[in-house]
Length: 333
Image (cartoon, rainbow, N blue to C red):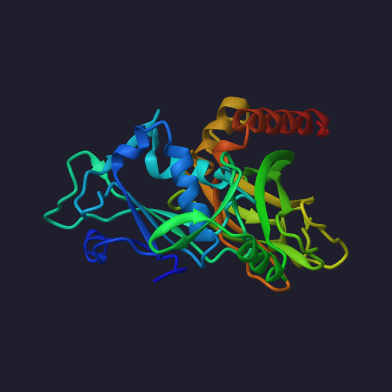
């Protein structure tokens, strides 16, 4: 089981875990979330698993295996699972990348308390190990079912095994490029701006950005989304290959990468509000991308983002309306 990141966890699978303390999983009561040492204790467990071949941190289960659960919503309006996804990387140094957070699927009937959930954090056999708990400034490993400070020889063994680069990609911005009439509608060209960071101690000589899929596309409007490699209406094209062979990302440094993107709109009016209304239909709050930073030795870990978190939709709509208006003014009478 150790080191395996599962697609999902069910209540039955959590209940089937053996009793007692084990090196490849750790149970934590839901009361930990309100404890002043929450971040310290979670970082300690995550550091230990990442430095010991991987494992599973289970939140909302007492030592005896019974469920007390954690709140579905813990901070503001953000689900506890998403909140943990946001804070976990920064708990360790190097930041933890090789992990997955699950909200356990309940059985029917369920033993999970009403209004509560069980969370499982899968930690992979991290290629960036050793990882230090950021606040405690301590490296941990698993031994005898406990997370303990790692001895010097253990850390040196982990450091010496790192031979491949480890890259992460972050969507930093969505920028307007141009807009023009097309097929009784409007086509809006944009650019996705990504930052590719090398989090390892090994240089990345050949690397690329792979956009795997769009998520939550507008129903019936699937053909209204376009990447430049599919050829834009005015014939512009993006990079034909996602692999870059002319740029090296040195350890701890980054490189910025662009991807051209566009949408076909059918606005009721060609002003800002009209364009914004249809743009909001296509690029609604749940629309997102799944992408990976790949290298010659790794396919990379899939990462997801919702565009609404990084783009100014109203600003793009206003720019598009202005571009269309200028074209109409410039057109011969």
